[in-house]
Every structure is written in C-alpha cells, then in structure tokens.
Length: 115
Image 1: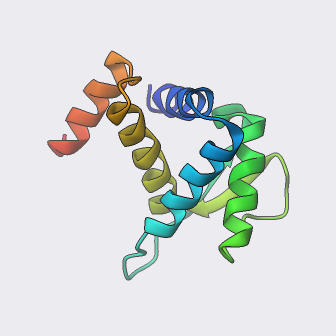
Image 2 (image 1 turned 90 degrees about the horizontal axis):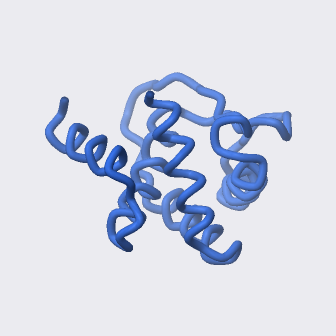
C-alpha cells in the first residue's frame, strides 16, 4: 500500500507539472531537506516505483546539489529520510493544488497524526 501511494504521488505530481516545474519542485524539496544528526539507511528508489522520467529528473537534481545518486540509471540511492521528505513535499504540493486523491489525503492525515 505504501509503495502504491508513493507511486501515485510521484506520478500525479509529474502529470500536474511541466518538466521545468516538476524539476523546480524537486529542487525545492532537496533544498528544503535538513538532514538530522545520525545515520539513516540508504534506500533505492526504483523507476518501477516512481517512473523513469522521475528517476532521470531526480538524479539530475541530486547531482546538481552534490548528492551522490548511485551508479545506476535504473534507480537512485538516497537516505531514507530524504526519500520520505521528497514524497511529503510532492504530496503537500498535490494537496495544495487540490489534486490529491482520497488515499493521499488519508495517508497525509495519518502521518500528521503520527499513526
């Protein structure tokens, strides 16, 4: 279920924006991320989860921000908190412009309540 919502968030955000706007949205998300002290695991975000175009754009944004995205074009390697921050940023954007699905709204409410 979690991966399904993440996929829908990425896909909906990409469809709601032009390529330039989507890249800017990703840049804003990466720039606003504040890494907390400590170590969080490295995770892979695959094209099968967020789409090939999103992977390409995210890889470009991360590299411009001096964040290593890993060696393979089929996925991006990043810290788990950054992955969740990106998803939260895109989901908040969809909520703000009124394009969030009911499942996204329910997911946002659950996370806001700490459930």
